[in-house]
Length: 401
Image (tube, rainbow, N blue to C red; front, side, top):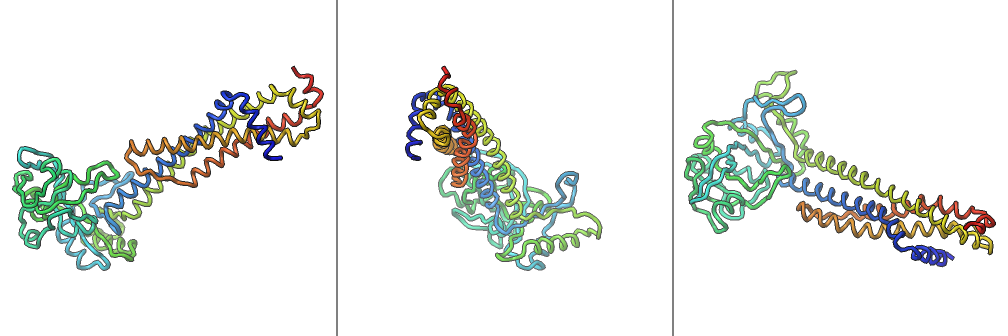
């Protein structure tokens, strides 16, 4: 019985192929838009999360000043080398405490030059940032203590200025300082904020202070914790230590900020997920519009086939059979549109992620949900026209021209 109803529904739809195709177009666009938007959004979320994770794991970022609505303060005093020493000796559960001081300078290699971000730091930086070398070595104790001009260059600096060969031992000029290249950083690519992480040159902190910056300021401290350490407790200990060192009395606001990268990753991923959901919801509106289109066309079909319906009812067809046939037609339209929409949505998502250079992350639950919703649209919006057809008076229907 069910097969016969389905066969009759397909035959009825095939009698007017163009109208059937135009009817399902709304469903196709709706399902395709939902899948494409959600898939691209998931890819963006994955990329942002991965980029933030590149900054390091179990990592606390400490900056002078407070930032936020109504709280911005950039005049707070920077950190110094003594702060680093105290943290290394008084904090427990830490894996690395890396200082960071930065300034832009012109880097010259042969006939090529480029303005690059120069960073003064020590070997804890590689641990905190989870950043390995592709070749060469890290700084020696003598270089860190004596202030020797040694440089470790990022992949962008290497490719733009020095080519792709082994450049360890070559001399470049950083600002007015001749510096020996002792290593190459592995490529990390762009950060989630759009900056090129590989466009950098690292120098020993003391060398940077003496010969590049002309001061002893440290603009950021990165604290990497061991696995299993309570990050909230470590953050509280750091805040208490810095308040004491910076002579901040009780009741006064901190003139520094401590950010847990894991919380930043979670907050960013949560925000991206919400935006993805909103995009999917907006795209889902077109599914409703497609359902209304199905209802309109089915109502037209009932009007056009009134005499046919009257004949079927007159020769013994039950109301339930007529209702089932018209409902089956609506469901077939919506399912066919849903199937085409899934294919179109995945194709658009693949193209969009390729253009935007995002991971192509398929969520099977979204595909199933969009397809199931297209079937639900067919049932909901097809029921009223089907019910109207089933309730026609056979005598009145036979009189219809």
